[in-house]
Amino acid sequence: MPDQAAPLVLQNIEATVATLTLNRPDAYNALSIELMEALLARLQGLAEDREVHVIILKGAGRGFCAGHDLRQMSGNDDPEFHRRTFETCSRLMLQITRQPQPVIAQVQGIATAAGCQLVATCDLAVATDTARFATPGVNIGLFCSTPMVALSRAIARKQAMEMLLTGEMVDARRACEIGLINQTAPEEVVDEVTLGLAAKIAGKSPHAIRLGKEAFYQQLEEPLSQAYAHCSDVMCCNMDSDDAREGIDAFLNKREPVWKGQ
Image (tube, rainbow, N blue to C red; front, top):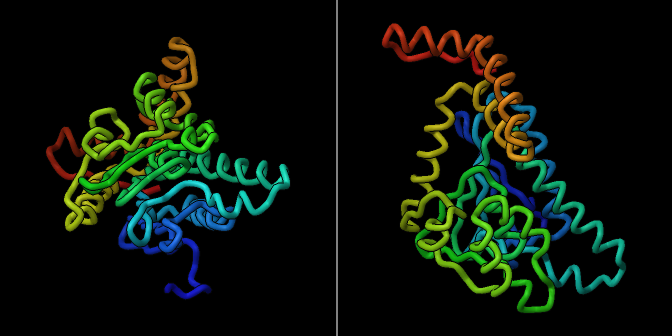
């Protein structure tokens, strides 16, 4: 049994990569309000850390995340408590999207309901080849409406509707085919594969990555002409940066760039 005083979210930073681990293994890392608030606080703290370029999000124990803590929710009939739960979840998902660093989900076991929402919200996802995904709320009369927001933006509409309407499990191979995750790996090497992906991104200009991630999500919500206008402004801003000048000079002179890191 884990120590009851153990942090709900563990944090480890190596070089420029931070790893956050959901730490409720006995509950399959179910998202209690306390866990969501702890993860939100960790992300907000890392957002201010310019030395951290990439974040990996994983779960302790046998599963990534089983979604909301139904025991906690069913034990409190106050509608305001339920509203607070879903509002906290929405704040968490928006923080991941707005996080200046790319966030990579590393999935083992199950990622269901709001756990699947977490995977869909992260910028990238790597899963063990035995991982499984579902939005099974329909099976208990509780349609996965908030997970639907992330899921419908991450994968094709009909694939999202199939998951939402049937509540059935999707294996890792299928999750990769429909674009819910980027790649799979055997369980014994998934840490190495995820860290390799993180290191590849961490080696790029952090300034360009921050600009690009913010622009990516903003342009998705804009009409086509507005998206082009907005991203043209972003490109101009990027071109005027020290990192862009360094990167172009390094490319032309066939050398490795040295990023400012700011």
